[in-house]
Length: 442
Image 1 (spheres, helix red, strand yellow):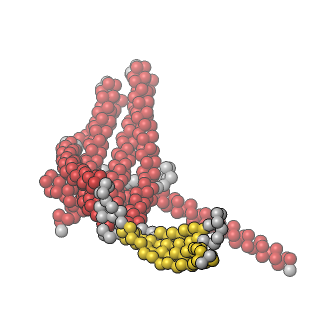
Image 2 (cartoon, rainbow, N blue to C red):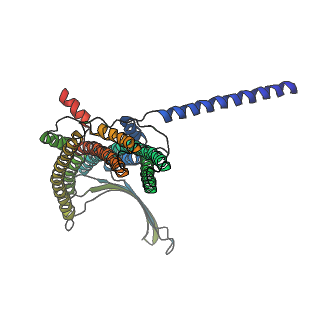
Image 3 (cartoon, rainbow, N blue to C red):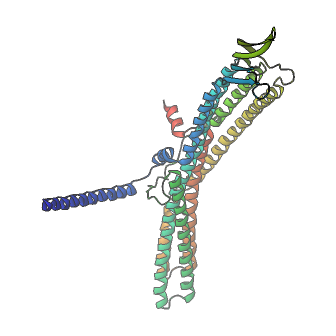
């Protein structure tokens, strides 16, 4: 029997070990596959909307507004009263009374309906404020996403520049061994190589920082691996109609909608303050039991009375007629109206600036469309070959490589300006340009 139990235990342990091995292999395979998956802009935004902690915190404001609606619809609590009067500590003749009462405040002004109306507007405002937060959050994600793409391309350019300088160093060393160049060329080449390596290191460090920021926005660990495929060659070529875009922005901006609801809330608060001038009436009833002792014909008699009564109380608004509350609500309403006008001007300005920046970036990108990048890249290879044959000076090589780097970096900067201008235009409009384009085609 013990032998069988021992065998069963060995088999169980073996099966458990195999299960752990298979599970670990599957997990490692999943991690590897997730690390090799390409992260698109849409996928990054989706992860942010699901996992971003700041967004989750913003969503709580809607729950708070809903609780305000529940609180606004509640009646005042009833009040219970009890009183006891006795002569036990004085004459101790059994005299005294007991009274039980119950009262309820009645909001006869209808203020509860107005409180609920304002609270419902508060929920709607909170929802638009969350949408406005999401608008800015998505813009941040897109900007960081394209910053990573730009830095990846910049890393490729600088890596290529490092390779060019390493090849140049080999050429200089070879020519120096044949006494064709001086030690100065070797020192300058080493200097150029170190500068290129330093710039490459700085680009890699900044790229790591931006990747960590994107991971944080997606609710992931700072060094969670992901791969972003290059997609910077696409240029938004649609003609931008400024007047139409401004109209769309004024129609769709969530912060503008939230501010408009604040104006409605100000009107509702003003009506509520006026209703509050009518105070609540408190009604109630009581039961009283009273014992008294008195003398009749020289004899002490006891009397036991039981009474039922009804009370009504009404505050008299002689001094406080909610003047301050009415004035404050009216001021808040005026303030919201002024802020709406100011925000509309700001929206128009943001749209106009984004369109101007996009047009400027397109003009710069068009200047690179005549094979400028390809020609400068070929020139670097040709100038190095010419230097190896002693046909040009070392200064010509350095200048050509410097132009290669500056033109490539400037082109990437123009691409980044173009992408950021489109993102800023989407932020200013409160909608995706893809949706705008699809709306035109329908």
